[in-house]
Length: 175
Image 1 (cartoon, rainbow, N blue to C red):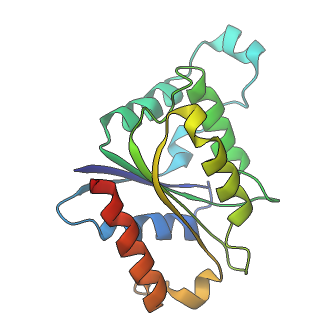
Image 2: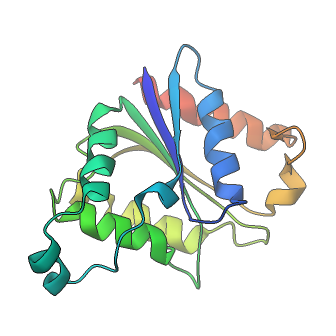
């Protein structure tokens, strides 16, 4: 199975990237590609820019990465209760290639934050709109208090309940 995992964040020290990578590592016999959305930075989307520029290569490349994947793991960072500007822009450009951005690929949606909210607002928004973009969401999980449940030195979950939840989630990708 080829798994595409990434954070919907452009932070160089993204805790969501750590969560996505860790979750992907729990899938046995998987080829994991950990994507950095910083590699897909583009001008802020507008119809005028689309007319002038066409579809940027970065959006086409991102869409192709999704096409090649057998499963996707996205961990959403939350900025003021919503998507990060970096991910929203990448998503907007990619949706202009095909509204079915996720191409019915089985996926897990995660979100985490240092505080008690666990990126729950953006996760609810993402999962609530997922069907409009052909997402086959197999499961979702909000992870509050990231630094209490994850050891950033070893890059491992240290909370047994969270570990069990993640193992259960990755099990759903094969179904």
